[in-house]
Amino acid sequence: KAGVTQTPRYLIKTRGQQVTLSCSPISGHRSVSWYQQTPGQGLQFLFEYFSETQRNKGNFPGRFSGRQFSNSRSEMNVSTLELGDSALYLCASSLDPTSPGELFFGEGSRLTVL
Amino acid sequence: QQPVQSPQAVILREGEDAVINCSSSKALYSVHWYRQKHGEAPVFLMILLKGGEQKGHEKISASFNEKKQQSSLYLTASQLSYSGTYFCGTEFRSGGGADGLTFGKGTHLIIQP
Image (cartoon, rainbow over all chains, first blue to last red; front, side, top):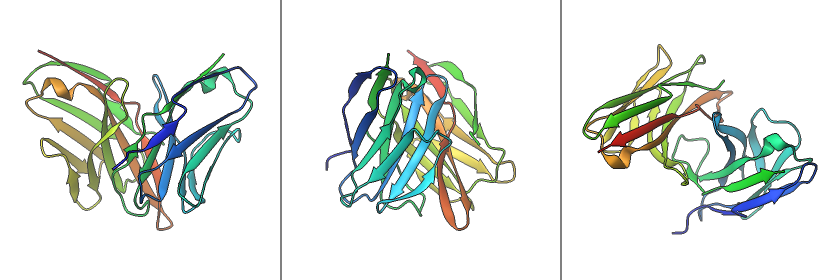
């Protein structure tokens, strides 16, 4: 069965622009989480969605937002991009966020802000 | 609160053992371990739950000390394929719901032939 799909895989933006990243979870998975990965900081939690509702949110500014659609696909948006937003953005899906279980990660969207 | 992993990096010869530690300052509900190879997505290894239940990988073991809020991942007789960055993810529970996984900064493991 198909894994987690993230698009685009690579993108370059300039400061002040905005970006939208997309994530299609594994079929049947209703929970989607987003993480920012940068060298030295590891994986930092952005937010988690389940059944179109944001369940948890990490410690990121309001410029970072997300949503989930009825088919469980999710998007995250970063507005007014800053140089420090350059990172690999990973999406992960799981069956049920209320029960500890395996996260299935996509290969990520690598954002470069110039 | 981000869990603290140690060591930050370790280099081993094939066949040697490694221990990676993960500690939290907050009471844990579960600890998750993932491995990420360069340029690839993180891959699930193991979950350790409060109360001792453990689910995961056959050749890698781990422990979860609830009193100390610590977990250790044990890689025995390491193979070249074990190289990568290991992340522990900690989960807390408040109000009956999960708070999402918080990952440490990772431990870089290099296995040399």
